[in-house]
Structures are given as structure tokens and as C-alpha cells.
Amino acid sequence: MSTRQDAARAALEAALAATATATGVAGATGAAGDTARRQSQPTDDGRPRRRRRAGVPGDPEHDLRSRDGEPDPHDVARQIVLRQLALAPRSRQQLRDKLRQRGCPDEVAEAVLDRMTEVGLVDDEAYAAMLVRSQQAGRGLAARALARELRTKGVDDETARATLAEIDPEDERERARALVRKKLRTMHGLDATVQTRRLAGMLARKGYPSSMAFAVIREAIADAPEHQRD
Image 1 (cartoon, rainbow, N blue to C red):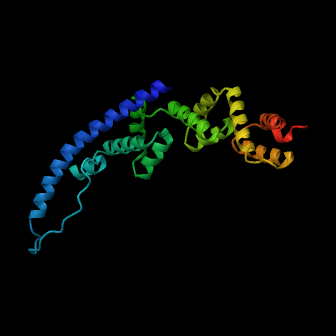
Image 2 (cartoon, helix red, strand yellow):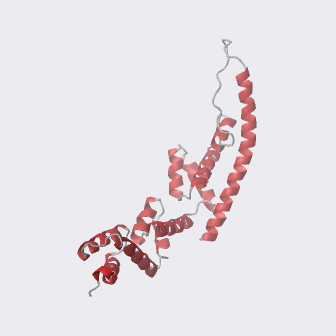
Image 3 (cartoon, rainbow, N blue to C red):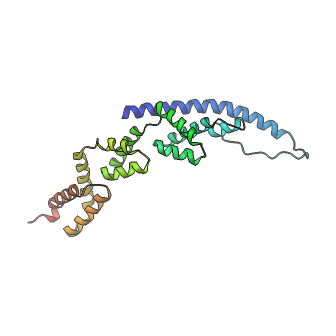
């Protein structure tokens, strides 16, 4: 997965660099010259023209719109997708939603996303694997909660199932143990029943099955010095 992500990132950076160079030079030079000529001419009643706020040089979407009155919708959609991917990894559905939000026709959006998928810039399998790893490391989520995260991000059920199937149950159990040990340190002095209830609630919210959760909690509480019998 990491090799595919590296290749996709390299392709994205190359596409963005090519776009910035082409649109930055052509768009900024052409638009600047046209703007200067228009602003140097007075209006029909002899008054000086008001200066319009110039677009940001090198802004792909601005440059596309400034070339003529009817930009190629595929070019506009492509630039929107590239800029979204430059900000953060996205699923195909997230990109589709963004294009729809920006008024891009569905058939144009699908054509652009199909092409981005072909060249590896849009890859839901790699995105799902990255999301699972980051949520495991950052929040300690288990498979059930990870499935909700993937669904929220627009990853289809088949891809989500395949990604979640790669989770090692023993690794998940070890993450549960680490979460319980950390939380238990903040609950010193509480009754074991209260500790159990709170720990079980925490693991349930993070998606751990109840059988695993209670087994890990019993083990941690039994090993806690405060509950050791003299």
C-alpha cells in the first residue's frame, strides 16, 4: 500500500507542478496584459475605470476562467480535484461531493474521476488503508469504529471490508490493553466496579467487541497494585 501511495503522491506533485507552471505563466502574462490595457482606457463618459481585484497568479481555477468566457468544464473539474488532493488524501466519493458542490455536471465529474483513478491519483484502497492506520495509531479505534469512519468518508462497503479484514485480532487486543492501562492510571482510588464500567464504555465507543473488552479489563484490574490483596 505504501508503494502505491508514494507513486500516487509523486504523480500528484508532478501534475500540480505542471499545472502551476503552465497556468501561472500563460494566465498571469495574458490576463495582466489584457487587464492593463482595459484599465488604461477611460469609460464612455470619460471617467477613469475602476481597478478590478486581480486574481491570484498561478491559481489554476482563476486562470482557466480568465482565458475566455467558456472554460472547458473538464479542465475546471480536474483543477478542483488536484487542489483537493494537494490539501489532504480524499476518497472518490469525497471528491465527487466536492465537484457537485462546485456545480460540476455529474458526467464531467465521473469522467475526470475515472481518469484520475486510472493514473493512480484517486485510489480508495490506498486511502482506506491509510485512514485505518492513522485512526488506529491516533485514536486506538477497533474494526467496528473504523468501519463507521470509512463509511463516513465515502469508502464503499467492499473496499472497507477488504481493508478491515487485514487487521490482526491480536494487534487489536494489544491496542485495547494499552488504552485500558493508560485510562486506569487516571482512575486510581475508584471502586473496581466503577473502573470496569468506565473502561468498558470507553472501549465500546472505540469499537471493541464486549467479549474482548471485558477480558482485557478484568486482566488489567487484577494486575493493578491497588487491587492486589496483601
